[in-house]
Image (cartoon, rainbow over all chains, first blue to last red):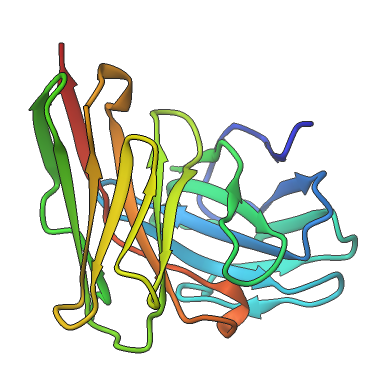
Length: 112
Length: 114
């Protein structure tokens, strides 16, 4: 049982480039979340999904887009990467509200 | 305005002693609280939770206390072990709303010395 898998684990981009981060969960969870964590700070919610085909904005959505075409996958896209988006990105899922979230091991993204 | 605050960035304790990690919140609507533990290069993992209808929840060496009037919760680890050395995040949410979204504190780095 892999839980939540994030790919890639590391990536370096140049300013203006685009990329997609993939999150896959095998627990049949309805809810999925994308967070970013900056040094010395907690997790800030970027976007989330309450089910297949749904997405919603979180606390810091600007510069990111998401899609949830399949229940098990939640994609995070950066259309035009900026140095301010250098961060560690975590994906999480949960079975329903007020259940603990299960996290992936993160994607470390550097934008030069 | 940060709604969940962990005012101590770091804490160091001796093996076998008690570790107490604190968390304050400002949003009185929060009624479900969780603690997560994070090792370097890994994602956070769930540790323990508490609903606002309780003031204490215990799981083995870990106990979470909730003081609603003070909007304060704490995590007690007894006895502390070197393997407990990690970053601990406090999180809060509003029950059955907001799609289970949690607001996280900035974390406290716990170091347990052998």
